[in-house]
Amino acid sequence: MTDSPAKRSVVVLAGGISHEREVSLRSGRRVADSLMARGHRVTMREPDSTLLSFLEDASPDLVWPALHGASGEDGSLRALLSAQGIAYVGSESASAQLAWHKPTAKVLVSRAGFATPESITLPRETFRELGASQVLDGVLKHLGTPVVVKPAMGGSAQGVTVVENDVDLPRAVVDAYTYGETALIEQKIVGTEISIGVLDTGAGAFALPAVEIVPRSGVYSYEARYNAGETEFFTPARLEDDWAEAAAHAALSIHQTLGLRHLSRIDLIIDDSGIPWFLEANVMPGLTETSLVPLAIVADGLSLGSVYEQLGELAIRDSRHSESD
Ligand SMILES: Nc1ncnc2c1ncn2[C@@H]1O[C@H](COP(=O)(O)OP(=O)(O)O)[C@@H](O)[C@H]1O
Ligand SMILES: [Mg+2]
Image (tube, rainbow, N blue to C red; front, side):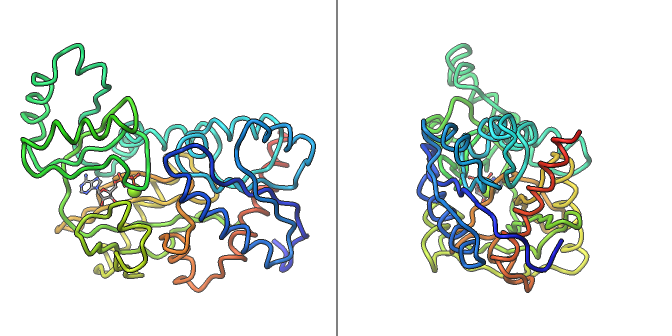
């Protein structure tokens, strides 16, 4: 790593057709501004039907996919970038796919020895085949309430409902299905919600300080995430030292277990005995002005521009290595 890396031609991808389009545009704008301020030539692009030929012609040094939701996080676009031999920031396709599908990530994380809430995964088809009331009875018998219902793949708390009473379960499941074909129903964990960014700026992955999330409404909903003042953050989280250490260790191990690269964000709830419960891993965490990873980077005494630049340099190095394999 050099003190002042070469000036690069960078394409920041933002927008797209996912449910998190608006968030992605805000993340992308911030990444683009930070890199331009450091002298790089930055173009912002939508992932549309002209993108792949554009990249072929432009042949940028680097793609910075500030995309959230499907295509940005499910690994598909990443596979195509790899196929074109283009360097890009963040996880490679196969690992992105594993992390993006929350039920799969939970299985891998649980097998690696970390706690994740007890859950049942239900494709919409199962309700058709076995009958809604039978299926819901089975779920309640196994998990009881409270539970949290969410789309198996998604982000920004869209389609996520906390269900305190049995009667509210059907509605929550229907809501989750508006975002995808599979719903994940898991036991609600009561405790301190934290999120830990994991970064590798060239010298190996490390955990950023945990950000503690205290939404005014009690629920870290879409509104609580993207409206300034709706949520109070504490960085580092107000945890006893050994609990904070255990959480940082869990986040880093989970990043590695899932095979994630360059950056990720691991969402956890710490229960009242200090156990970190894994909720999900984010392949491309939000990078907006109210997002958690930028907050943690700044709290760690680092500059956003310099970190985004170093991630880019690492991506370029990794891409050269894979070409010479
Ligand atoms: N099992 C759970 N117990 C308690 N709260 C949960 C649970 N799962 C999710 N939540 C709450 O819902 C929010 C969104 O869930 P999460 O799985 O992180 O999905 P997203 O990808 O939308 O961020 C979390 O930030 C947390 O506040
Ligand atoms: Mg989350």
